[in-house]
Amino acid sequence: MTQQRKAYCFGLAAVLCWSTVATAFKISLSYLSPAQMLLIASLVSTTVLTVTLHYQGGLKALRQLSPRDIVTSFAFGALNPTLYYLVLFQAYDVLSAQQAQAINYTWALTMALLAVPLLGQRLRRQDIIAALLCYCGVLYIATGGQPLALQFDNTTGVLLALASTVIWALYWILNTRDKRPALLGLLLNFACSLPLIALYCLVHDEFHAVPWQGVVGASYIGIFEMGLAFVFWLQAMKLTDSTAKISNLIFISPFLSLLLIAGLLGEVILPSTLFGLAMIIVGLLCQQGVFRLPRKSTSQ
Image (tube, rainbow, N blue to C red; front, side, top):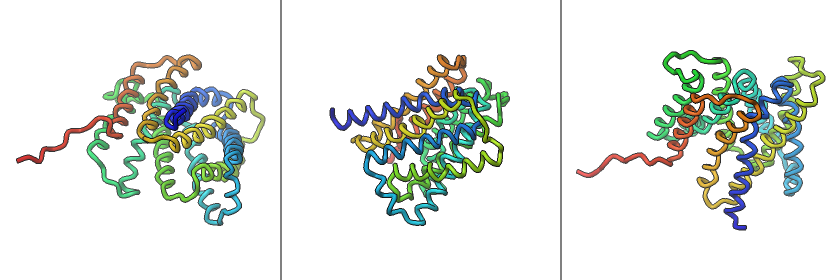
């Protein structure tokens, strides 16, 4: 098997993991609160990442950690997974799965927009067009196909879902300055998030017995959404000869996710969701430069 074919296999494995999580979120949230689900999932994902790093021989680097690395890990851990998933799970708790997962896919555009003030990057014409398409798609989904009426199914849920994209994008932008190895940094972030999440649960009286179904669901999320999906994706990026070839696989995920949402959750997939999601996907493809915009002529 060629390196590129291996990259496709790892990339598709990550996409399949991400395609199942919207359904897993909703099922688990019927048994657990967002904070309880996050604590269990983070504990499981920390275990998965530790085992993976041990298998790759990367745990030796823990001996070389500096006090600054520990502070960095707590700072990143407070952002992701703690704050990001608390906000995201709250959004899934109050929105339908199809709405929450469609809005969450705008994070790539949010990152491009935040890179302008934070990294000094230039806002391109295709970024502006992508923003209009994506956020019109969000508006169409959030209003159930009646954007002019501006009557949202759940305003709080929409704002939470959009806020989660800002947190996620901010995390990855700040991550560009992180000198730690990617997988080791991710493990440290999750490990350092555990006391923060536990403290949140303690303050909000979330420590009590939970149904086994919720534990199983949260463990699934910890293994696949927060653990193996990242491992597979990092491996795909390492093996590929073209980042674009692998990155475009992500556009399969929302449609597979909708099939699972309809089949396992019994949600009726609304035409407004499909149309809005299509606008978001087209916007993201435009932002990636898939659709070439005509250049202004310089001829006399």
